[in-house]
Amino acid sequence: MREVCATAARVAAGDGKVFITGESGVGKDLIAQYVHARSTRAARRYVAVNCAAFPETLLETELFGHAKGSFTGAYRDRLGRLEQAHQGTLFLDEVGEMSLRMQAHLLRFLESGEIQAVGGGATTSRLDVRIITATNRDLTDRVASGHFREDLLYRIKVIHLHVPPLRERREDIRPLVARAVTRTGRPVRLNEEALEALERHRWPGNVRELQNVVERVAWMSKSDEVTVADLPEEIRLAPHGLLPKRERRRQLAHELYDALVGGHYGFWNHIHALFLSRDMTRHDLRQLVRRGLTTTRGNYRALLTLFGMHESQYKRFMNFLSAHECVVDFREFRGGSNEEGAITPMASPPRAAKAASRSRSAEPAA
Image (cartoon, rainbow, N blue to C red; front, side, top):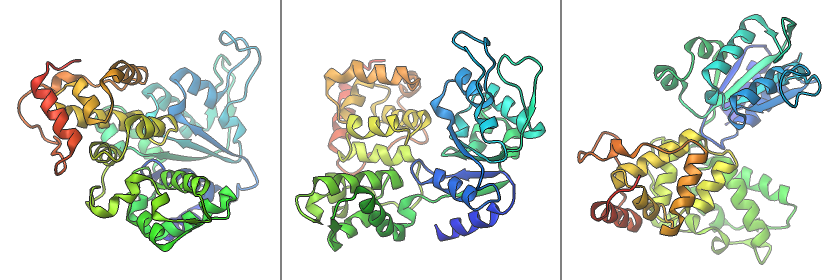
């Protein structure tokens, strides 16, 4: 991270567009704030927008504003985030989730510096805004699949900063723990054994997951000293090899799949919470479902067993996926061959064995 921060400090001196990549929860927003704070625009506003948090129509008015009467409920003119960030910095998080139509609007602004409010007629405003974007997705793949504009990628990817996942910078764990404890205001300390357990964990949720764990144990600990016994089960079990320890980088969905199948995470307690807190995207959730369906050969009911859910939660699970447009077509997994990218279950995972047995014996359900 020192190298990333040093690079960020150098690029802060200019006005070049910054493109930040990294998994969910690694701190991309903090790097964006770091760049702004050390730039000549530091005295001006820093405005952040999560592109995945808004439907297309709302994102347009959020960024460009709207004129009074432009749609039902528009009772007055409203400045967009771009105008609010005039002479300052606009941070667009999860830019890869933008629709193609919104990408065209953003590209036009990047080329001309002009915006037109929704319902604003021919009136345009010319703005001076530094744009910083971030994503946890591979936009090159998105370009190849036709979901992201190549010309927009060239516009935003002027200076590229990659924030490595926490498992690749374990030396940062202790300082992060100390800072998280300080923020709780609790007079607790983690003993050496507990700190070593935290360093061994793979942290699929990265810094946000670490902060969550530290805050939890700080408030739940019965004494001022936090021991291994106070840590969550998935962290206590990690030293015994029940969690995968592959050294190669893997996507968030792969990490979460292994934790679910190994019984260390629960779908509603962990995956659902990560999704609602926007620490994982719809793409991550779809990838997680796809990996599960590969194991169950397209059987959604067997997916409940695989992910540690009760059969009675089938409707709730499917409604959750449907509400967030994350239902994956089961038919492509019905073939008998093991397609490229198929899951090889971990050694003796109880959930995977039960799910595989169920998928062979029961009629798959869509």
